[in-house]
Length: 130
Image (cartoon, rainbow, N blue to C red; front, side, top):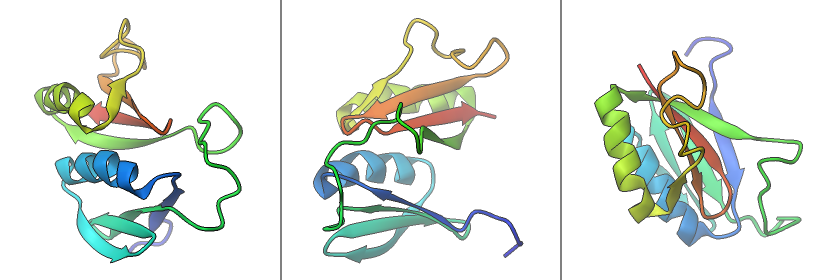
């Protein structure tokens, strides 16, 4: 592994079931495979980097606010424009809603083709077309 490369991201979630439904679908759609599982969490890995969702008993709150200080969103390479479009089409069935629909797919600017999605727990992802 190369120094400085992202090792993993751990998201504490209010509901493991909802997180598995939304994050599990998204990550496997992007090529991740399940990596680890325990009673309070699960992780998915791709090329040595993994994403963890955990319903920790140490949670200080039960709501995520992407507009508060802290994590705003995670951004993923989404493949071709057609692949991003198919992901957007399937996303609502898995707990994701399209953000900024009036600006989609150029909410990030005229030269930036991406989908901005938010799951039912308020986590945002940006899926960027190559």
